[in-house]
Length: 219
Image 1 (cartoon, rainbow, N blue to C red):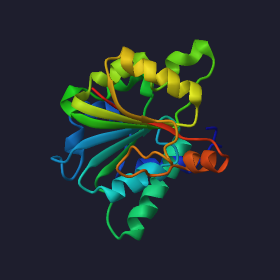
Image 2: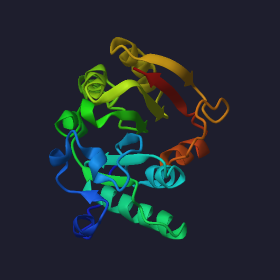
Image 3: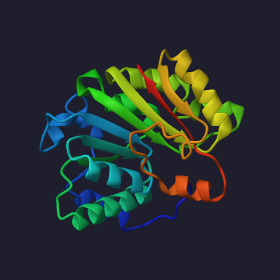
């Protein structure tokens, strides 16, 4: 998603208590970054404007979350959405962190010691041109990287509107040694998640009559 530059985003992020500006320093010790380090640790890759993570983290105070994106403007909006959600609930956002990083190099900020129990990937760039497929967040090359920091029996929750990306991802997960334990070509008619938090893209595509594809994969 393209988004206009927002000059306020970087200063607001750097002033935020739940934004980490130097994620490389926390490799192997992310749990120490949270008020309660003993909670399960999960991440969202490509958090965008943060509508998903703001609800997910608020509704699951017994889990610590790290949301990653590469664009300051997106992260700035995510920060504001998180603040608003937690303010309405009259609690502090102590179980969620934001950071800016290139997901293609994610192994520079996470490793096995971090014990990541789940990855959420929602409506990532489908990179439709063949020469760009390796940039997909579900490509075999990326999945192999995730395996380096996922704990045993960890899961990946994936949603997309794109048929080709979804069908290709089914192959990618198999190639990387993941077991697909649940899948659907119409998430809203065939729920596979305990609770589905609808994202901004999901609502938009659904209103256009596009069916949402989803899967749960396990390592």
